[in-house]
Length: 334
Image (cartoon, rainbow, N blue to C red; front, side):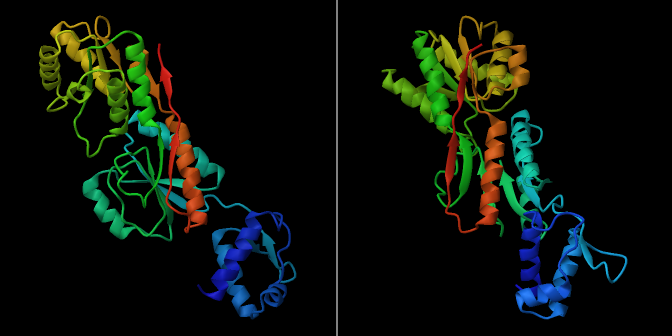
């Protein structure tokens, strides 16, 4: 790092800390040269960097010197966010992250979520513009920047990653406990079956609690559809009812999956949500407004907020060791 850049960073932190009030006269280049033990030419270059960034301004006259234009420039830098913006749940994560970034003087910059495009932009990423990255993608990023992974448990085998997520395992146990408390024993669990990209910890929590309650071979109660089409979901539901004809409860990995089961039940004439108790996960507001059923509130705004705060710490102290922070979840029973 050159001397002028080093001096510029010291002065920038002082400006941001309020050492020099706005509209006040900034120390002269001679004073700064004496302070840092460098030439006025070096100081002039350092001050020029702060002028370019918008912190300082030259006055109209030589006597006026340099004045403080602003102590806080927005944005100080940009934080990249890899997110599926079509998902309302992920949009709530962005809301929390954006609030934390805004409070710290940073802006959020959307980065492509599509894995096909991801490899390209990770190679071309300008680290001088993007200071760190938040991601909800299931793809591990290889970039020369601090990265915090949000709401992912399929990275448990990568202890070197920094993660913030909700306690999905406890959420799965809460759903199982609710159904057991209501007297259900014939219970099934519906998921997409894509363990490589799914949060399987909630599934583990659910199955573990059923096992503790003496439900025989709880893993055999997990089922999925071959695709997300209504036709395939109906076929999967029919097959599960043939395996467990006395089924009284159906737990789904997400609220959208539970909504799919409602649609399948309506098409097949099966009273899903009535005779067969239905639960979801995620508290998707649009779905719960139409057809409320028990679910788990993951507080995604808080997750995004905490993830951004941890990223800011990581940006300030790159030597911070890897971490996994889990936030509590809440059972919602309408």
